Length: 220
Image (tube, rainbow, N blue to C red; front, side, top):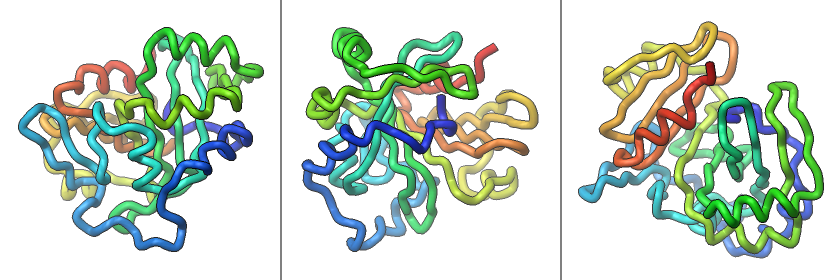
C-alpha cells in the first residue's frame, strides 16, 4: 500500500495524536533547503530529508516537524507483510504540496498486538486489507521509529523534471503498467513515475535501501 491510503481513518486515534505538541497550521512552511530532491547523506549511512532521519527519527519527531492531526492504520496486501503507516493528507515541503506517508517500524510483538486489538478490518478496492488502530493504542505510536517516508506530490512528475532534480538514476525498473521506478541507492531515494496513477518519492536510509527496494516494489 502506498498512495491508495483511504481518506477515512480512525478518528479516535487522530484525536489522541492531537494531544502531542507540534507546530500549528499557521506556522511557516519548511525552509527552501529541504526540498524533496535535497537529501543530505550522513557519514553513518543514514540521511536527512524534510528535517527527519529515516531509521532514527520517531513519529513524535515527525509530528513536531509537520504538526498534528495525522492518521494511522495497518495494511496487509498480497505478497507483503502487515505494515503500520501514519500519514498526513496534505503537507508543504520546500514549496511542494502533497501527501506524506510514514512507514513505522514497530517490533513484531507490538505489531501483532495492534492487529489483535484492531476494532475491525476492511478490504480495499486494491485488494489490500486495512486494520484501524484501537484508540487505546494511540499513545504507543509517537515513540515508534519512522523507517521510510513517501511523498505523493499533488502535481504530476515527468521524466525531464525528475532527471533535472534528482539526476540520472543508478537503475530504472518497471513499476506496473505505464510506470517506471528510478533508483538512487546512494541517497536512499526511489522515484516512481506513472502515466496513469500517482507519482511517488520514497525515502529510507541509504544503508537500508535494500528494504526500500523490496517493500516498495510492485508485487508480481
